Image (cartoon, rainbow, N blue to C red; front, side, top):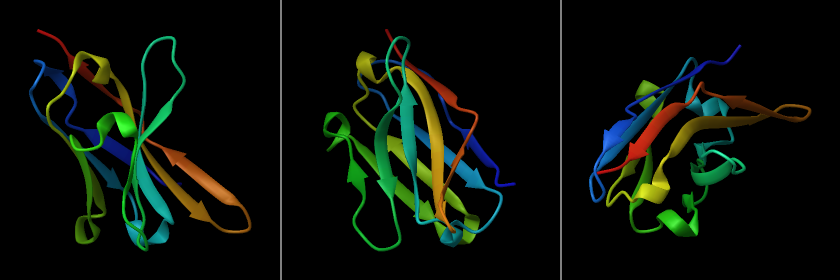
Length: 118
């Protein structure tokens, strides 16, 4: 069973930065995509950023220019660098991985809380 373990969440003031990490229990080359989603109370889970091995990263419009997704294949880890954080970025952030076998399999981390508040 694939395990995705997130870390790096916390409380930060508006305008501040955080870096989230997602460590996978197996090589991230095994996944067609990896990324970050977030969910705040009363809202649906939404894509923040995703990366694949073949195309440029994809970002939600609300985070373009502020967030950067990157991957360290040797460490089987995906990062989300979040700069210029805003209160509306407050949410639980989930790491996601997808693998295609005879169907698409989705894996999720347990989530890490990010709170942007003064």
